[in-house]
Amino acid sequence: RTQFPVSSFGSCVLRAMPGRWNKQPVRQNSVETVSETNQELSKVNELHRNVANDTCPGVVCEVVASDGAVDVQVDCADDTPPKQNGERASSLDLGRFTVVGQDVGPLVAEHGFAVVKHALSVESSHRMVMVCDKITRDMLNIDTKCSGNRGTGRYSMGSASQSGQQLHHPEWALLLTDPVLDAMESVYGEDGFLLRGGGGEVVLGNVLEYQDLHADIAGMPPHCDTQLRPPSMIVNFAIHPIAEDQGPTRIWPGRGRPRDTQRAPATDKEPAEVLRSVLAPLPSGSCVVRDGRIWHGGTPNWQNGPRYLPNLEFFSREYAQYNAMQGQSNRFNQPTMTPEVFSLLTPRAKRVVSGLVATGPVAGGINRNFVRLQGQALRDDLFQRLSRLQMGETFSYRGRGYECQMVKDIAEARGMLCHVKNGTATVRWPFY
Image 1 (cartoon, rainbow, N blue to C red):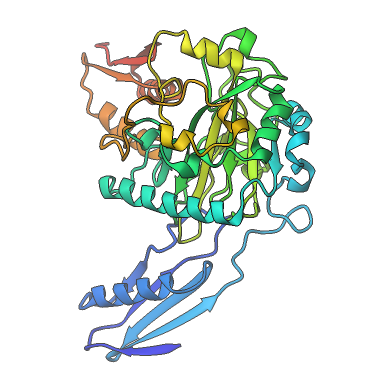
Image 2 (tube, rainbow, N blue to C red; image 1 turned 45 degrees about the horizontal axis):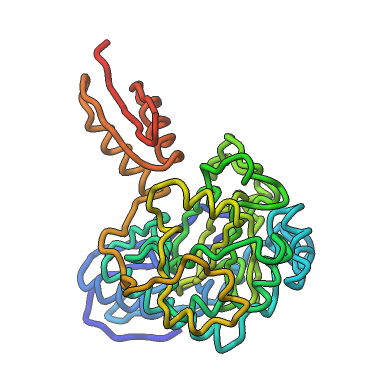
């Protein structure tokens, strides 16, 4: 308890950071205020924020102001997630899924993912943290409201880039380590795969919304959609330790393949075990090797700092060929690696980047139009837009399949008609 003198004002109490995990999410640094007068309340708010930000995650901070002084009491509460399955909050026993790279194949075939330790050196992890810090600052300079492009406070670094990838950074290319290539060969066999992308995720601190379950790939032909040869494999890298309360990925083992037409359930319809099926704790330098079809989603980051999870994206050779023959440009069939970065690769790594090396400059930096509402922010926006629709008017939305379905659900709940075709949802409020 510390006293801070301020000029006189009436009594007020500020409370923050209530217990979490099994309660309704409350943004960690939000302030609930009870005040007789609002004089100089901003000073108390500033004081509270400083105290909260300088203490450990899970802090309970109370500020009581009266008689010309402010009392600040800070308690580090036992606010960790409740333990389940012995010593774990996660319903996954990651030890069962942790193997060396050469043994990844059978686990991916059965469960859709595996964990490999020591995929990155300490130096490489540190370099990746530095470049992710820079990319995050650049994104937030544009997205000042933290709307994100994968939900509020959630970002895809690849999609935010002007080139659609981050492979122009040498740090991304150097993720092609022997343990990673061992894992890919265990799944596909030697020369059975190609690198096609590199980006990854950022989840800001105090982002308390779950990301809906989803797959990372759709629209593949049947000959590419097989159990033993996934059309795509994602390798996510833990470049710092990832704790269970730090926005880890949750995953539904084995669900989503072959890529069926069934949609993953909404968060409020998920089994409790799946909500707790998180890929954590992960030590720094480890990686998660994941079939791109498997249902997964983000979880709340209760900590104050961002959680980084850069990735590499691989295609089977047959799916890479199919994708290249579609006659349309997308971010997975563009040359986005510079010759200078290519020269840093080992001979083994160079074999898997066919078609990615540019002959000229690669656009760097962040796309100024990268922000894309998703999750609850998108639901709120669509609800507001449809609420303004008058009888006899129509509204069209072009987007991904699940976004069009969201439009349809909201519209039909309001008694409107909605037709979805070719990635466009058309809503009409007819005269009755």
